Image 1 (cartoon, rainbow, N blue to C red):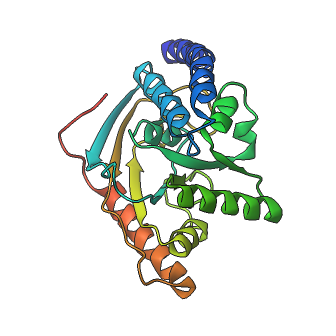
Image 2 (cartoon, helix red, strand yellow):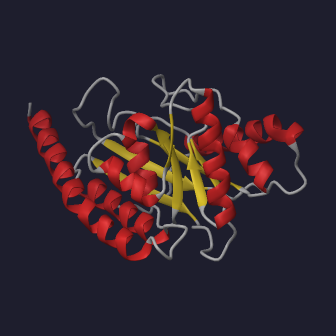
Length: 248
């Protein structure tokens, strides 16, 4: 009963943060969008809000392991396994700017959806081939402008704890644009927000930033092999024991 009550308070706090953060992102967007073609500043401010949402949740403790990409490094295609809605918030706390591929339904949400649009995130409608093609072209355009992109290759969160099969889009995108793949492995979020409940669970989450996988010299025939390699890397990383350093 207590957990339900505290969960309600957390959801209210999240709504308040989102409502207050949206005007801030809007101001940054209005001041920078006319010259910042990457929408870098609006995106960075938007992602800072994810830190607040994680901080105000007393049920979660988050470890960040690994080295952040060099700010001067080339854009990359980030991929992460997907266990829970919490993955989006926790990966969003990382201090580098990425354009996210998200479901169109999320972009229709008040506040969050508005900020996503201002930040330049890309949406896709499930089962719509034309939408998939348009979103793919948008991601290519962002990479060529110098922005990194973020995708969940499973397409949806796993409900069993086992990783779902990977879709090829992220790896085809990386090979076509010549960008490296940045694997991110998350573990411990499955009980943070269960798919069938709004009650938060206690979660000790580890997010690992893994070494990038280069794509130089690869062609369309290598998409499946690259996908398998990255999937194996993520599978091993999410099963490894965490280090001692705790953040959150």
